[in-house]
Image (cartoon, rainbow, N blue to C red; front, side, top):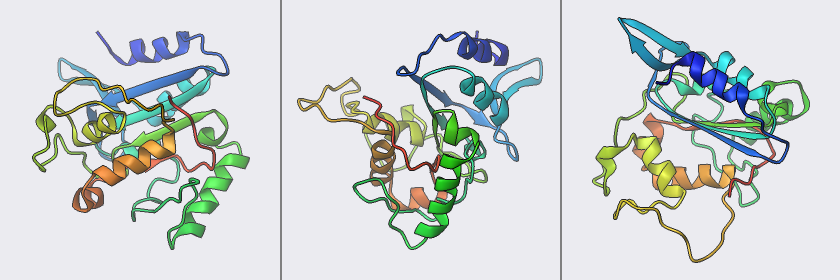
Length: 213
């Protein structure tokens, strides 16, 4: 059974090396005000993981760490959350090209050259929402098997290549690189504008992309 102690100790026990890729995915409840992940509830008591606890555990292991959080208020885990709340646009090279470019570029460069945790500890994090939004249990667009997944999770696994219509893995005939920033852009493309406005995924603002597969 997974609880906070088990999750954090499992992360700490990973013997990840510099070129390893560590993936962390959470889909569940998030606490209003803090974004804490509610990993279990027993006898009326909630076992929660705070942003600092999770990011500290990840920072202490090697490798490249990629985190996906599908929970309410999960933007609390992203430094400078809210910078992307207006639905920014990225160019093909990954650069921000929206009118708010300078406002977003500043935090990105700051994170990459300072001791900011997400900028120096090889952590790339994508949240389903800002730190003040709710995440949808499922979408309302009538897509195949949509009711089985949280909205963010649905578009995430669709972007990774899962065949939602047949509910089975799908291997592309072409070998295309999947990067963190490319995955973010594809999730945004698949979401309707109305959903994007109400549930705005956030990402770590770093100029460095990460190849996942």
